Length: 80
Length: 222
Image (cartoon, rainbow over all chains, first blue to last red; front, side, top):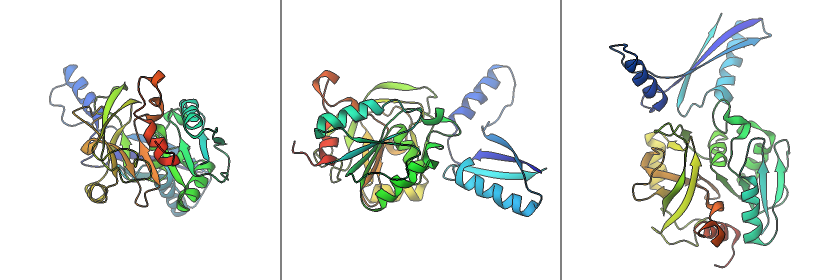
């Protein structure tokens, strides 16, 4: 079995109001020097597959078809 | 004219849409369920608002991958009119039937109020009963109505008259780029909009500004 972690992040230039709100909240807690905060998503996926290359291709297809909206988001696939 | 309404778990404006289509066309729409792979022969397919699949992952993302949406895409490719309102709009962009994306409102707040809309293109199957530039009222109720498209897509939408509705007079409730409230596809048969025209079709609603949209689509004389 292969375990993978997929990270989905907003593309540069796409406004992230949630990240902005978190940024302000961190400053409000007294954390000085907090720059930009961008919020993303993490998916931990288990695959019944032993071929890493095949798994990676499948995981990328999953991102393109569902897990990420490539209009506004980038993704990265990391196999443990 | 015959119409169909797509039903998905978590939608909550389906009854409003069914009532509007029934009252305006004189006959109730057929309803199709998420697992249906075929849609009967109709002229207009409506995808109502709500929170399909609890807005999990992204608004409309799961609904857009249901079998019924493949059937909607097939009908759209044949020229059947499709209208998506609110969550229906989000589903259409997630399904790739309309360009761009709908993101969290810049205020981070759910907005539920009446806004003013400008008819940015009165030369569509959905807006021909309005005047170009006309200002109408419409309710909005959403958390993720902030329309976004990359610069190239936006230029194309603006250049080709695919922006059909714009928030008017400083009423943009969500930070949507270029005040975009509704867009149409290149072919002109698939429309998506965040506001709820189906909730303003008769005096009891406090006005009928939304009625002409359905009369346009259903080809009914005003």
